Length: 113
Image 1 (cartoon, helix red, strand yellow):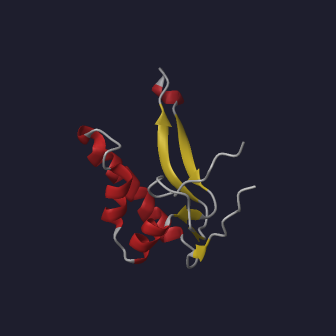
Image 2: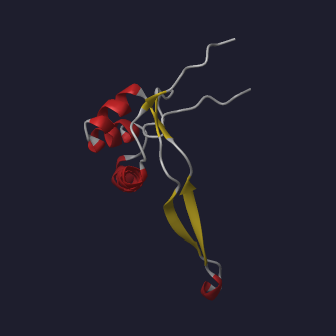
């Protein structure tokens, strides 16, 4: 069974659009063992295109990133951590904007068997 794809921005709907994008480091985290001198950096890397649903595509093309953040977080995270989650998402989306390599392209939907 194939896991259905979801919008890379709101994670709410199946993607309708694909944005070509160069690979980039989305975030870096320190793995801190008991001996801090042995710490290592773990990189989360974004590879290839990003996909968006129709609503997020409209917001991206209109430069309404706050609307996407609301769509992605409202009702999904407790109020006390929502601001931090939004900031983390917005940081990733800024990197997406810097590494985007072309215009959005409509995703061809597969027909159900």
